[in-house]
Amino acid sequence: MKYDILRNVIDLLEEFDEHNFPSGIFPNDIEGFKQWLVANYKAEQRDNEPNWDGKEKGRSAESVISTLIVHMNRYAKSYSKSAIFGSSFSTQEDFIYLINLKAFGEMAKMDLIKKNVHEKPAGIKIINRLIAQGWVNQTDSEIDKRSKVLSISNKGLEVLENQMDRIRKATEIVTGNLTYIEKMELIRLLNKLDDFHKRIYDKNIESEYLLNEVLKDRGV
Image (tube, rainbow, N blue to C red; front, side):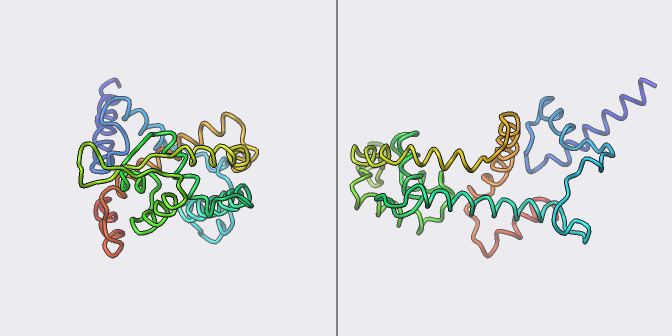
């Protein structure tokens, strides 16, 4: 019997290697293997599945997850819009860019744009607006004199601090009635999704080819 178990384990290891390459979602070690086992355990527990609109008509879990993520983004934007109403901020992106510069220190324009998952034209527009307001300083890079680095100015720190109380309250509302444990689990799942999509985003694939390239990498 112990040899049957060993063969089963070897089969699982082969399946793990096949599914985890080339995506690399899980670490290629024993910890990654254990994470993969937990994520892919196929016990029959359909009674524990949540209900969702259109499920009885065949709507997929992937469809409802995608829709709910879009909805959450829109809800969050509505709270952010309320938090900055009457302030000097034009959009939520203004204060998000400032928060990133405050938290992570000076950085190149494209690094800041990528950290906010924006396309270059949209990101440059936001940065130029922040510079014009005097909230962000732009200086020559000490590493490469041809490039510029950005840092939050004293004026930017002041305008951000004046609005932070309302911004924090808006952030708290977004998490709704989730318990602490649910918040931690949601962070884990969203980090997992973010890691997956960031690898794709960092490749800077043109929109024309993006979907086909991703599907090809996943063997679809």
